[in-house]
Length: 213
Image (cartoon, rainbow, N blue to C red; front, side, top):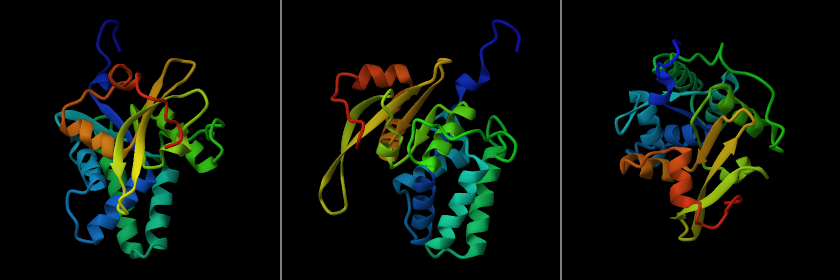
């Protein structure tokens, strides 16, 4: 890239959707539901736009394989699981960066996480130069050195409440990754909130730390 030209990646929100988000969307499809939080997220990634901001899905081959395995395990037909997995590959390939999980991603799971699978997801996000990892399992990605703040309070189906949080992971090379809950992600997108480390720090750094929500 010539010196002085803007990085085209800066204009796009590259998103790693954790397997739990993708499975939730597919379950909602099977149940005939519409416009659930997970379905809206997959919709942003499928259309390539989150309230006007271009989006690029980023996943590893292993994540897609896990997604297919989970769908079959919870009762989806193998043909449906195969089709859903292939759809993710196509969404990636036709996104702004034309990513390919078979070629681009790999690497060693992040040792900061106890769970190897979660470590692989975090490694994928950094290898893909993702901006955001969207996951319901926030506590699985909380490390000792990440920034973490309470963002909102969500009500569970049983009426109990849960504090949601966001995290910012920063690598020695300066790369950052935001880890956010699906409900927060949709809320911010639909209200036009700029999702960036700078804006998250400005809005939430005065809140109580909440690494284990």
